[in-house]
Image (cartoon, rainbow, N blue to C red; front, side):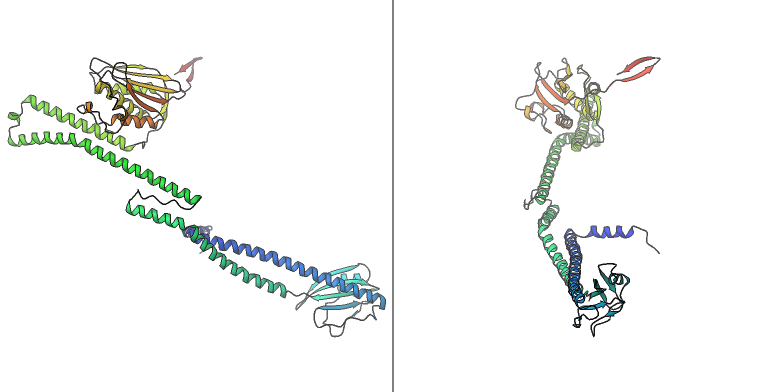
Length: 483
């Protein structure tokens, strides 16, 4: 059964990919040397063959001229032919009648060719031709002499070419073996930093010790690779440290509401088991206790949601889109009013377009308004202002609360940080941290200052975007711009 076309190349490719880099370099080096030797061998054979051919032809021409000169002096029939030395040069004289003369004991040459006969008849000056026989091949040079011609011939001998080829083949094999050994050595030496890098990476993976930086050695690509891996380890160290701090801070923040919630629930269970729940806790006290439990559960829910949002970081499926930030602020203010119905929220908004994620921006604005509503007196509104300032969209949330102490300003946006004056207030200490993360993700900046009313002024600067062009619809022959 025939194999489908293309399967063998794919199998060879898979085999090659499974080889180690050291083996690949060795094979490539040996193959490169083998190809180089083969090309050099072919070129040398051609050059040697051409050189031997030229030498033999020149020698035949020279000997033929000497014999032709002697034949013109003594005549073709009487000229003395050099005796056959037993090998090498062969001589023949072509007489005017077409017969030939050769030295005694000389091997029989191939018959006179038609072209050589034309030279003897004076139709051509000279002729160099080759004859390939069953046993031997001949190189024959024919030169016009008197009324006939003289011929000098040599048996073509390929033994020098064969010997040279065998020598080159032996040298080539030695070069290939030597090239493979050299390639193996070079690969082992060149990949030694990679081996040490691999061992260090395996050690880090096994020990989970991200503080063990890999020594910077080698140069060029190896050094850049090591530096990249060290940078990756540093990023992993920072990520692990941030996760550990987040877990520790979360555990600390969850401890107080969980303890309070557990104590209140245990109190209710103990009184219920005794059957003294109604007598020990009057209706007013039970209502206060249940309200307290509800507030604690709500605080835990808010804290869990904020922890989830903070732990996700910038991982979100929400797409970035062009939006009017004023719409986002209005939606956030509506949600804030439902949370704090006793606090007035005054809006002073200008349409400013930005490129961002609507849900993330609304969460940040809502956290800013919630923070201000928590501190603002009931008779003083939370002022929310939005305007364009240069190439930025500026959002300000202003409250009339006690403000932020100068010592607390540098840490306002830290996770779980709560000023001493805010310890008794509800909240997790994560709201402003989420604001800063969202603002930074949108290429903006969040700052805090004291407002003119004595409270806190939280300001967010975001890069403004070009508003979309109005869509024009044609109805009943007139233009209507939809903005």
